[in-house]
Length: 130
Image (cartoon, one colour):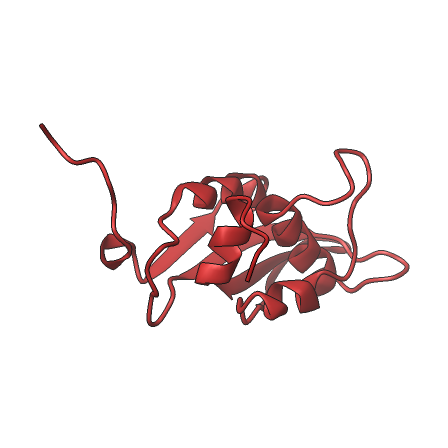
């Protein structure tokens, strides 16, 4: 019989999602990563996405919110959440965003990088106890 359990030591050190049109939608797959072991350092995830600023947020803030919605949806399908970078940082994600290039007028490619912390993974798996 084969053991299909994946332990944290076999996770990649870095994961790059370079499909700007839809990268944040793939983040929900992280919920299947193991969260029982302490990962030191935790894997670093880099998500390239298109973002357009709005009246309240910069392009980088919009991109971070898209990543947050991909990880931990909030507000349902039709209501976009805003300013969730601090929440991800409370989970140990150390979120950073940087502009990569101008794709079209007012539309930038942003790379959002964050750590897949044990707390984030557990929260994605439905464990809301610290």
